[in-house]
Image 1 (spheres, rainbow, N blue to C red):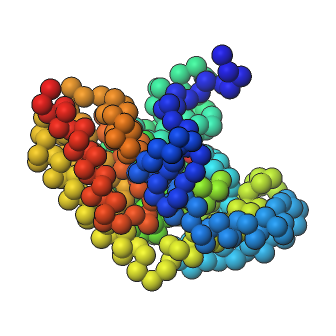
Image 2: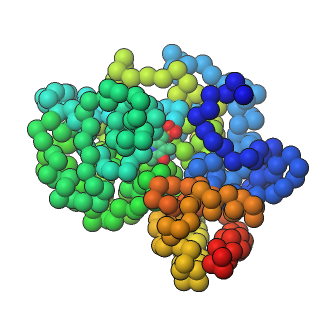
Image 3: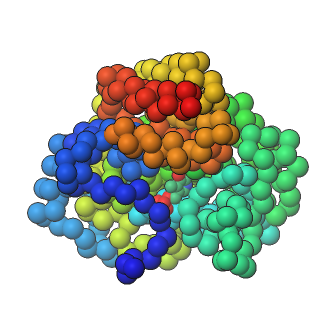
Length: 391
Ligand SMILES: *Cc1c(COP(=O)(O)O)cnc(C)c1O
């Protein structure tokens, strides 16, 4: 038995090299990567601009801690703010850490505004916010909480997409609402614009914060920098991570000026926003903000959706429905087929995808794929689907 704690059950695949949208094993088998490290490698593998940013920073300075000024932080925060709703940015190292900070912001915002009794956060069923004690409580799913009681206090849950249930759950103790605009792990459920707009109105009415978890759906994945932009609303707080570092560990909390309640001594992190992370994060943003980049993601998303819809039409005994937006899409398998088994069969064809809840397979390709890559992925899906349809 290995000394590694067995928290994962990885596929029997180890990659030694990545190039663009392909990964390679030591024996030179090639895989088309529609998993992208779970929506992380937004620029694919070994992107020259990202490699150059990391290399040149690595030769100068890695880490100094937040006891000293890190000019790269100021610059990246200003660029993120200029490109989004945000006025302020805090850099973390991961998604869960960004969410922890967001939850702290909700509590402190209410206390600073004369409502220390408001400390509860309402989230949605089948949400995922990370694996820390507060973020598993925020998600509220039994499978995440099992064995780790007592559950951190202060979280309520309602059905995703249901405004009436959300409104009924708001009490005098509510500080904030926390929602993924598109649920990732939970099965690729996309909230519609009217729901997100309704949440905005509700939060204004009750004086509570609207917080979005865009760890997975943010950073260009849906064809906007942030998925909530499709609903044309301004949140108070957004937590993001995954794509923001393109594979380098990085997360961020973005807030409006009013919700920027963390001051000296309130919050911190040793690594957060270190020079290496800032260099790579800046390079990722260079690419995402290039003219036409996000428009291309939208166009590719339409192609991917069309491809998946075609599969469903051709193999109705295998696939149930397609979900999602942009390059964050899912395909739900019929009950007779287990998504993890189908995923393993796709690996046999040289295609990597990620499983999700509700028997869904997630397609989260690098944002730099081409139409030819989509066609290639659909062929591989077809090869596996045809076997199931005829069996
Ligand atoms: C991945 C994810 C997280 C947790 O991020 P980590 O970096 O794994 O801590 C939180 N929320 C959502 C929506 C995610 O997809």
